[in-house]
Image (cartoon, rainbow, N blue to C red; front, top):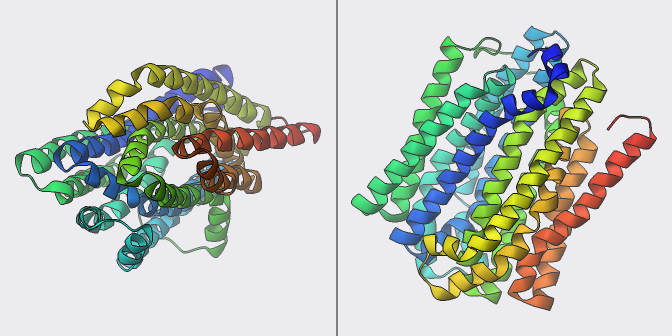
Length: 441
């Protein structure tokens, strides 16, 4: 990573680091959407609903993994920017070991949570059966996914984002091909779709390990001495990402609880299919955030504060334009889009009526997320955590439980845009406060 190159053309450097990350994250989203396609067409609407009911479990893995990994990557990046290469490598080793241990612990604990969760949501017998088929295998796949993601962040952090993009291409292609083989040709149902994800994730892990054993220039796997200070600082620095993902998981649980009582399985299915668009846009924004974060950490560690702020402003402009584009496209294509996943007319009508409302949240969602990444990358965990907590839990939960009571299913669709609008006000407040204090933002 070269400071002069960043100064000369910050926009080009953002795209240099972000485009491979965006492709990787969009391919990750494609895997989820492909699973939804095969669930809807070869298992049925109950299969899609079953996967959605378990999404809080996925967000738990993502939350813990991102908290450990992003906190570690930010510290390692600042150490690297300050010229402390060996310290950066020690942080890398501890981060990966902690990620592995945490992911394995979550899988063990989740084995005991399936029945209480399904009982509370009042899922019907068929949905329960598909849920158990799918998620018992996913408890093996999700730890591998989290470790792959953590290692990928460090691959980007040492300036080689293209390699991890290739890994993600492999993962996506394998997943889709195996989905078709197991769900269509072999008729293995929900369990087969989950098994496809597991095999693809393991293959990707082996390729990533090859990189660190043979190609890595900065970060190398090996023994390390555990540092409580590094652990606590990393947890604090990555806490906003944990709050964000866990809040999303809690919010998803609340969405399912409300929708099951307002519209039943059809409503959950419609919301899940519309949610694939939000998930894809979120992965696009996260790709930009993961690409820009090492640049912001590096420049901030090198005391180039104005440059770090300029990187944030440029990235915010890019994601805002993308949000407007997705809103316009989905406004005209929502009917066609719903037909890809289901043939049920009532579900398709729900999707078509709610999509414009739902995707209007993208106007502010990208800006809120990138600003949170910026605060994390520059060591300001409090501001980042408040933004994540607002958009993922406090305001969102209030909207989920209040708006549907007043407006029915329309209120469900409105929860996200209202939440992002309120959170945008907080984002502007934090940036304005820093400007008044004399901090360049």
